Length: 234
Image 1 (cartoon, rainbow, N blue to C red):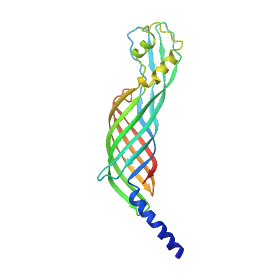
Image 2: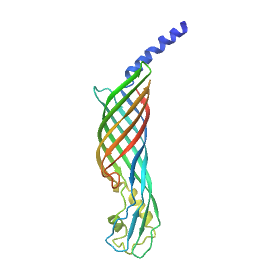
Image 3: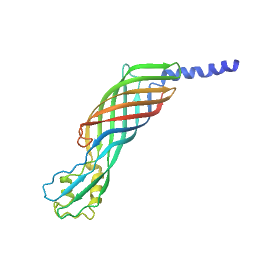
Image 4: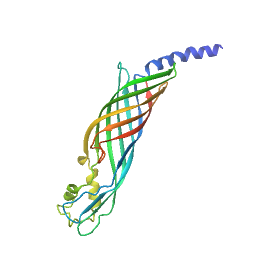
């Protein structure tokens, strides 16, 4: 009985302190899946007989990190970043009927989100665990890989699409698409909501986010994503 009393006296202050301050800041890893659908596209060329096909792809897995501050009255502030991507095929044929070697390319984007969120409902187990439903929104920025089009291929084919030498065009196109100078930059806003759960200093989030930005996903005005966070809160 005395031993149990000593254990309680030793660790109870730690539990109380953790319960009081572990919500001030937090950080960790973030994983997710974006939900969208990009259809196969075949742009019409001004040069007869030339064809280009950008293949279809659906959804994208993402990985990144997050950091938040929970010390401000009324609302919490957070920033998170991730990288997401998927694969699709690019096929090109000049007016002579000569085909480029199919290019299996990876669409991708890097994303940064600045969010203000607020607790809606909170529950807790004294000294041990807390959970809360939250909602919020904010500003986001993106850098994404471009999609092949007539202007791009005209430049890569030395302004002669009809007789374009496709011998190494797939590698030339890949180099162009992966050059950071050619990435597409955009920004928009987002709304999100979900559940945060904490056990002592262990921190986790499960939330849905809707992004409004018509330049990230080809042919779409935005996209949704389901996200999981695992980290620490102090």
